[in-house]
Figure 1: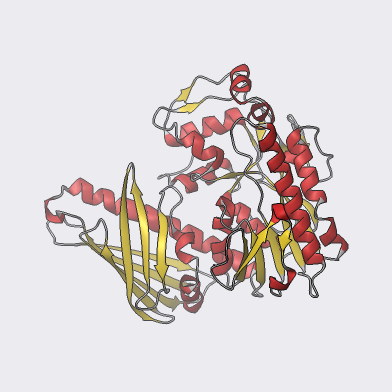
Figure 2: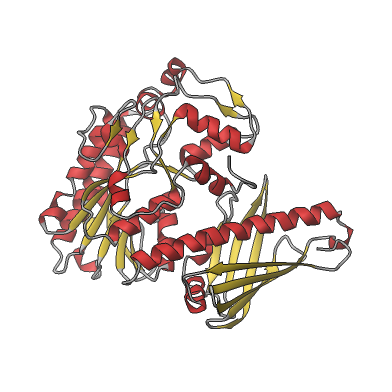
Length: 466
């Protein structure tokens, strides 16, 4: 790009070997496409939208650049179904922004061409290095978009041949917000359980703590994904907080499963969340789904949680209890808290650092859920974890190496126990080395099989991975 020109032009071409242009266009036209394409390392938020990619559709986002946020309002001005759509900035941080997406078939599959013409404030006066920096950032963005789209399309070819009607609880949570766009871009129809007055026919009111769920309000669905439950949090536990965690999971799951079992047409499959905390502290020993439950509070919660699915199993609903590992996302949970210390560096380890973390990227976690829906042979407990668990010390060392940040002194176990009590003992200082063999043997393919590949993608790191 030339610093002397009024605008800059950026082009990016991506090939998708096993997809047609019509399939690519259809994916972009579905609800959730923008959410899937937003880069995880940027804290951008969709504030409102009206319509889709047809002319007249609008979306407003809050864009985050370091400590500064901007509002961006884009409007779609043209489209040719199956071939192209075109959007522009109506209000935002750019002096101007125009983005044309073109789709066509090729001998190698299909091609998506992105043509962006934009100007920054004071565009012609800005130094050349700043223009090059913008070019690099756009390349990073579109490289990520291709990575997501390739993996999502391959997943849907395997798992979304039949559009499903799916009921989801916990859709507004961190995991639900990642899962729903994946499902809708695959062509599935979603209904959500909400604890407020419904805003549309696709929302069904329930109040699990009061035992309220009207079976007459539940539409005919093929599958149910149950994620709702009180957030356990990385904070000191109180007696009342622990009771809420246990009761919300046990009562909510029991209410939902009893209701589903009594329906005239029960769903074919139920996925119900649990956690690898079921096993307790496994030390360095690998644990598979046949292992017995641990003896701590989290293990007790998980056991009660899973046992509450009994009415669904008794009704002949294929039931999968998903023992979820530590989901990695820069937006919430443990990784977000660790990244908050990024400017200074990262804690070398927590306690002795030998405790295992059965991690998994959030994209692989939600992809595994779709895989479980589409795989009739899967039932009972299944570990939703990456193939290579790592110790706490190795996790911190990998993060520091990839980001070029120093490792700070470790946090001693007595200090963590003093600060966080039982939570520190069971979550921060405890470890679980869960096996992903059952998931892999069922045919699931990880997009982020190693911690390095996951962090490079989640943090948008440039260059070759070590």
